[in-house]
Length: 65
Image (tube, rainbow, N blue to C red; front, side, top):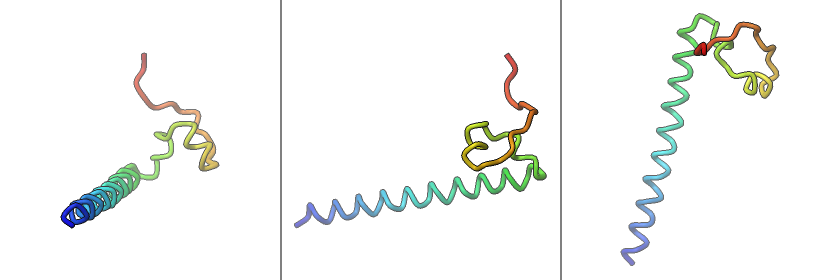
C-alpha cells in the first residue's frame, strides 16, 4: 500500500521538474531573443536554421581558432 504512494509522489516530482525546466528554458530563450534586438538568428547553428527553413546568414559568430 505504501509503495504506490511513493511511486505516485516520485511521478509527480518528475512531472513538476520537467514542467519547470521547460518553462525556465522558454523564458530564458525568450529573454535572449528579445534582448538581442532582432539579431538572434545569427547565433543559431546552420542545422537549426535548416530545420526552421530560415535563410542562413553569412556572418559566423563564435570562437575563433
